[in-house]
Length: 212
Image 1 (cartoon, one colour):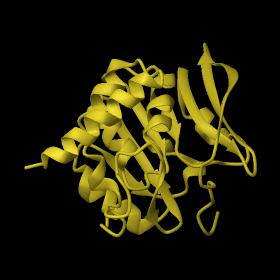
Image 2 (cartoon, one colour):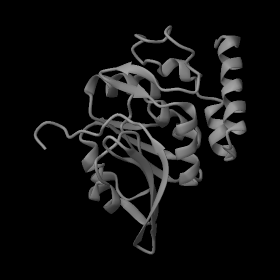
Image 3 (cartoon, helix red, strand yellow):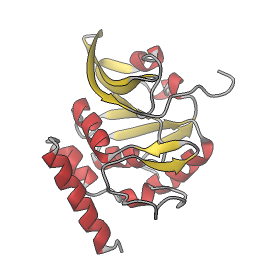
Image 4 (cartoon, helix red, strand yellow):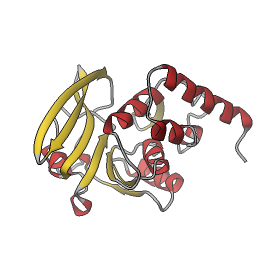
């Protein structure tokens, strides 16, 4: 059974997200249910360092981080997701974002470059979430098209393969840039592409798999 202090911390996190302007009930309800402390880190190496529900990124090993709750909520809210949609995540990391997406009732496919993280995330996520080790730049073409794509690491520019894997009216949100990064929302309307610049952010870089 989950400890009451974890429930209290998670409720406080959701209240803070509301105070920071997050309004999407599907996002808030999901983040209020997912036990974030289990994902910091999946291997247990960093759980005791900080409050796992604090609004800041935390290390999960291998030079990777779990994003701060506000950024997770903000990105998912911007996608305007509905239960039953098919969503691709690039950069599974600990599996936390995929767990929130799963709790939101979407069909989740997630790609992680680092095999050990993918294995640990898969153990926590269970059978509902489809996860594989691979190059995020390539997406998951065998399962395309996707209603939405969320990218949890920063490429230098928007990967064309991910755009191509969106449905004709799909949406994507991702951080773009190296030293200076900014969230970009990609919206397809009737197959035409619209780009919308959004918040300044800081994510770990998106890298290619060896051999690509």
